Length: 306
Image 1 (cartoon, one colour):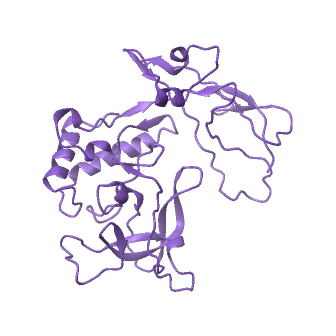
Image 2 (cartoon, helix red, strand yellow):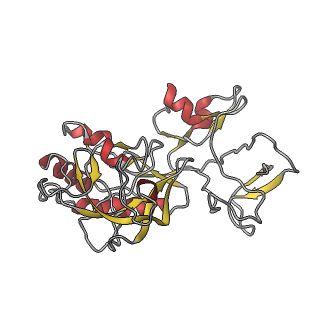
């Protein structure tokens, strides 16, 4: 799943010719970018994208639009900058009604929340969404309907934007580096989808049901005995020619980092998982990464009660 050279070139040319102004761009390339992002996201955690237009601090692509929205040029961001990406909001249709909000939780996951906000008309200007102002050029800064998360609205029944305004919806989000460069050939976007080993998030709500006393979420961290390949790669490690980095891998002090953190292109490599935490209780159980009839990998661990 690779975004075509023509789409990437068109994106860069469109942005440069319009100085990154989202209200004047052609934008036809955004549909292709978004289709690839959605296709990648549907791979159940086994795919990620490099250098997407907007990314979370962990490198996850942020939606630029809702493909099913009736207005084709309605985007989630106000400008192609770090600030624009940090204030992404889903478009909506029914003003002053509950809507599907784009959220970012404490675990670093992008989530969609049903009735997580109210549909309000806003206008992008001077680096933020605000209540439309008739003194601002609406051709350059057209008002649009966005699903403003509830945390930025008054809770008095009127659901007006709070006095301090709309803050960051996706803290520490960033725009792709190639958006900021001058446009030389090597600076063309390198966005592509790569298959990686990754464990998906469980589908348990942030507040689990009362009858559920044991549950788990995966969070990759280095330990005293098992280090993350991503830390090694971010520090000074690199893979030799013909091999790709396995950022979700781990290695021990006795391992050669390249053996565990670099894989041959096109190969499939098992991924070892280790679970731990405070207050661990119980007998280790087997966790299957697929259904019982056809397990991909079996991981032995214990759960932590909450």
